[in-house]
Length: 259
Image 1 (tube, rainbow, N blue to C red):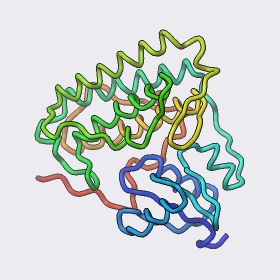
Image 2 (cartoon, rainbow, N blue to C red):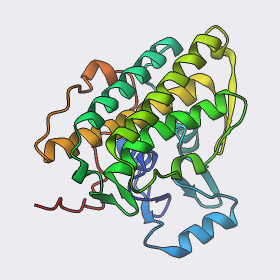
Image 3 (cartoon, rainbow, N blue to C red):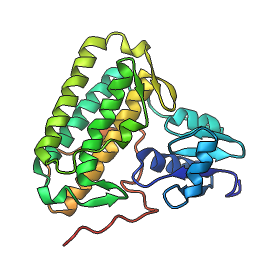
Image 4 (cartoon, rainbow, N blue to C red):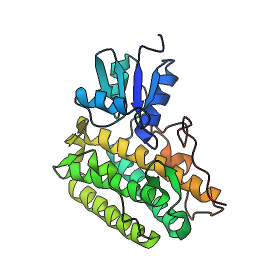
């Protein structure tokens, strides 16, 4: 295939964008890479085909919103073979991920919260974002819709780590309550999202690896600052999840931390 066969529209800091690009590369598929923050016309093009968010993989007049790896595989015409974790195991993994992030927020230096990571995202935003992802899952699981807006929510710019932990603990309790009330039926449910109807298992799997990726990023930030978090994700915590290979998108270097 030539490089012009596929185009991947992405933005920095987007976990699904990084995974989509890695997925194409893992299958030997070359693609044109378009960072929509650097090419304003790209978002206008996506809007013209009815798309408001990335990642999008396009070939000719066809495209797929690449958040669901099975749908991406079908679009590319490749076989998607990976272990599928049962719903109760995904719930356990997400509970573990949320607990690890709470531990990270317990030790993050207050001055570190304002450190810029990507365009319009700080360490504070990243810590908040982990739980906003789960909040979005809950919105869909409760009969609403997981919208793009859930992933663009930001905390109060003056929020300290304690406020972020309070938010995280609230979301963790709500998730536990949802599972207690719906665990027996959720496996047969489908939820509405901005990229189409998804089974509970598919959406929860994406929620797990999405939050786990940001947990890895927070760990990297703390390590760079010389801080040891009380909890870390282990290989067992992410086994069977389609995690990105890289922690950060290497197409755009991170800004250096102030010394």
